[in-house]
Image (cartoon, rainbow, N blue to C red; front, side, top):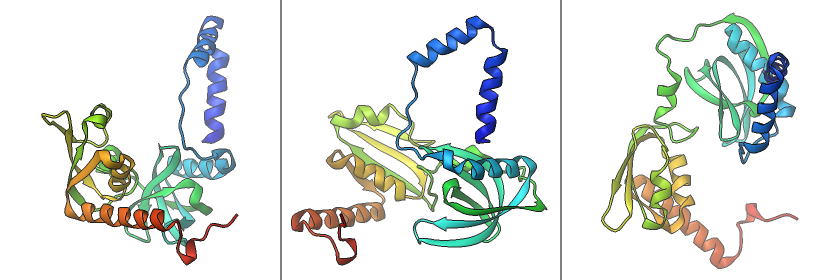
Amino acid sequence: FYDSLKSLSQKIKATLPLESLKYLENLGQSLHIGIKPYKPYAKFREILNRVNHAAVKRKTLEIVYHTMSRKKESRRKVDPYRIWFFNGTFYLIGYCHKRGEIRIFALDRIKLLHETKETFEVPEDFNFEEFMGRSFGVFKGEPVRVRIWFSPEVAGYVKEKIWVNGQEIHKQGDGSIIFEAQVEGIQEVKFWVMSWGANALVLEPELLREEIRAEVEIMLRRYESGALGEEEQIKV
């Protein structure tokens, strides 16, 4: 996949007339698409190529996967439905035989990979856009309605983007807004809200308010004491 994209680009350029090539060169000098942060995928090209091959050939994969949250590795079989590039990371979307459901795997956390002789068919009712449509990012969870207030200082930045399908923006008289949406999982919503600092306030649900309150209290204690816990000592 990695090499195929590079090869395809070279083949397309080889067939273009000189005028078109000059236009592409000028376009390359005037247009730059930046993605940060990103991962150095050149060293994961083999994994990327092999996962793509299995997805195209509809072959089940046996993988050893490192789960970041638990810091553990596990072996499982996965039917690769789709490769998805999001926020600088390539993900494998596929049916996990171990969990009995569709899961999302970061490609660079696949430590070992074996293409089996088993084949699969992508279910006719699987729709990638619908599967990810209500997710605020990568993590998925229980559906929940969120309502978040944003100050006039940042309201313009928030309302100019589509953060999640079906979002609603309610303008307030003082220039602030209330962002409302049905999302699947609140973990990434929490990170998003906290990135706006004091310019954002969760109105609903209460669980999200409590999680952010607890997070802020931990941050406050650390800044006031200037110390970390025993297991969090900074090593130089």
